[in-house]
Image (cartoon, rainbow, N blue to C red; front, side, top):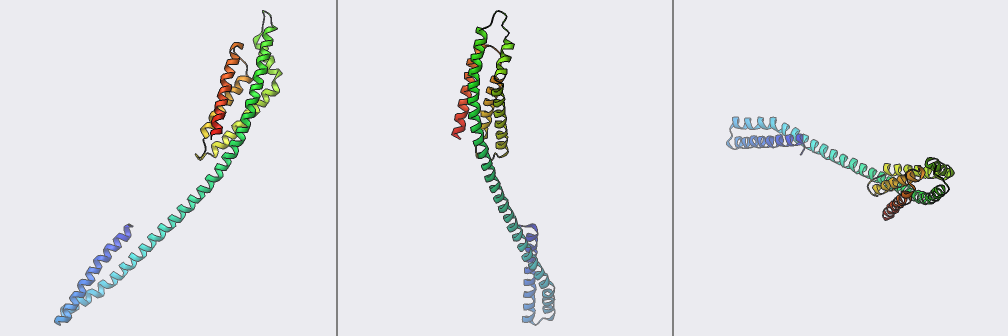
Length: 227
């Protein structure tokens, strides 16, 4: 209960008893024909009755204010809830659109990475077979990258698009969809892209390392399609 409403209610209760007391005094004075008693009762009612009336008006006014305030708060809360629901719905639509574009871009990048890895492994093998004792591995890897520059640039562009789609999903994430699954898929795509666009290490481990990365992309894609 509102503090002021409670105070006015207590005052009104006290004044009601006071008025009732003076009324009884007045009745006693009238019945006993005691002028002094009747005078006290009458004077007491004249003083206390208006105070009781004012107190009751305050109670009613405060009660009305409290109810109106509560009703306004309820309306505002309902409007805010409706607004949030609309915003959440719009965000879910944005997330769904970005996730669809992400999945499509992911498949293109994955396929392109597989094709590039095959070309690079084949070119690396040929470079080793055609080399002599002075085999320059750094020069050979640089040539392989230069020969596949357009494909590498395309992969990097696809990865950038994936990141943009991921950012859109993060901004629109309401918890309805599994954002973490798309984030993991992006990290897998980034590792694979980094591997095939920046050749290094040993030829003997190239194939097995790419198979692991390729399997990771496959697993993450399965997670995406389960959402």
